[in-house]
Amino acid sequence: MKKTSYPKQDIKVLLLEGVSQTAVESFRAAGYSQIEFHEKSLPEPELIRAIGDAHIVGIRSRTYLTAEVLEQARRLMTIGCFCIGTNQVDLEAAQARGIPVFNAPYSNTRSVAELVIAEAILLMRRIPEKNMECHRGGWSKSASGSYEVRGKTLGLIGYGHIGTQVGVLAEGLGMRVIYHDIETKLALGNAGPAASLGELLERSDIVSLHVPETPSTKWMIGAPELKKMKRGSLLINASRGTVVDIEALAEALRSKHLGGAAIDVFPVEPKGNADPFVSPLIGMDNVILTPHVGGSTLEAQENIGIEVAAKLVRYSDNGSTLSAVNFPEVSLPEHPSSRRLLHIHRNVPGMLSRINEVFSSGEVNIDAQYLQTTGQVGYVVIDVNANETQAQAFKDGLAAIPGTLRTRLLY
Ligand SMILES: NC(=O)C1=CN([C@@H]2O[C@H](COP(=O)(O)OP(=O)(O)OC[C@H]3O[C@@H](n4cnc5c(N)ncnc54)[C@H](O)[C@@H]3O)[C@@H](O)[C@H]2O)C=CC1
Ligand SMILES: O=C(O)C(=O)COP(=O)(O)O
Image (cartoon, rainbow, N blue to C red):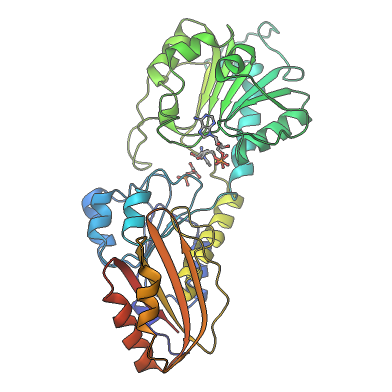
């Protein structure tokens, strides 16, 4: 095997929450053999122990990588969220430590959209109640309260990747689609923006949420918003549990103001499959409850495993940060004949000239240099035509620059 600057068998990859085996296979195929795999998320003390000597960590939505946890992850080089949401990671704390975070922004989009469409049809037909009644030995064959989705108005809150996909599928079923987003968005098909969130809530027969968890979306649907929804209308939430005030939703369902709901995400979710699920919605026949499985299809999980592992391997092997969610993005070519130095630093004036001073002796040729900054962090990559000893000396020189967060040498 080709000699590398850091032996790959010494790089520990920690994979949690049963990420797909395609991720494990991808790391193995790239020469990474030290892989610690866990089916579940780990309780914090165990997480801190396992992450303490890990270089790469892969998680899903249940593992919270807080500033306190990252503080203990002294060797951590990069984080992969094998999902869309990245709210479970303290992205600023990771950035301040020079740790790029990657995710899979599209691989489970379609899975969520299909579930939402299925739920819209089931709720419109009152199937959850009828299903429960049949299970109890009842029989109420009646069209009362059951409708087609055709011609009904679907209001999408958040018109990003998932929202647009739901809208396209819904239009295929003959629904009218309106949306509300904080950004101006290209309307697909015959969809159109609502004048405001309030107007969307008032006009929609079904409201479906597709926003990320941010300060602006936290508890964005509470009692006042639910009150604005049409009597008998339906709510679907497969975004994040903190977007909807679940007690207010339970009350709106009890009072029959809402006709039904489908909820996949909850303010507090069990840590693992063995833990109990507690919710004020339990026992309501007109509510579909699912255990955060919007993105859980085999197709999605296999694709996510390949996609995120590839991003982590590429960063580890080559330094590329393309599509990192918290980091300056640099897409780098291979560097077969150069040694590559990576310098991650606080974005302060004068940094580039200090970096260039390290190479000012002129004894080696610089083949290429790349620079990208975000607000707080700068990332410089330098390919040099140097031998091993010279490259190591450059790395030491770079590490000594005040404001340096991290240096790496790749070959
Ligand atoms: N239930 C599940 O298993 C899954 C849940 N998700 C959740 O779905 C969320 C959305 O995913 P994508 O559509 O891929 O994200 P996206 O980033 O493509 O779209 C989110 C949209 O929400 C908009 N937005 C943000 N704040 C808003 C606000 N306050 N009001 C209105 N619009 C706002 C954004 O401008 C953007 O257009 C993810 O962040 C994740 O939390 C994603 C995948 C699976
Ligand atoms: O992709 C997301 O954001 C999700 O919510 C899916 O999370 P999961 O990987 O199923 O824990």
